[in-house]
Length: 70
Image (tube, rainbow, N blue to C red; front, side, top):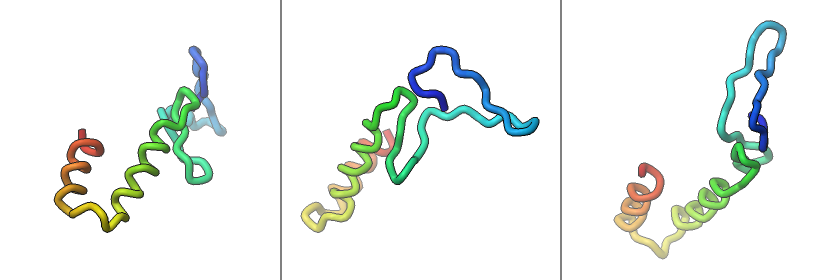
């Protein structure tokens, strides 16, 4: 993945070309193609909800279907 580039050039190791990606995980953070961490912030916010005992399972399922599955 190239960050903030309009002309990404393929990366090759020996004769194999590595696939392009829109995001990757580095040091447990999700990095997007634009260099932003919006997805990482959303994931961390949702982890607080998933592990919370404040919200019912039904509420968690509704959130899952609304945000995660889109």
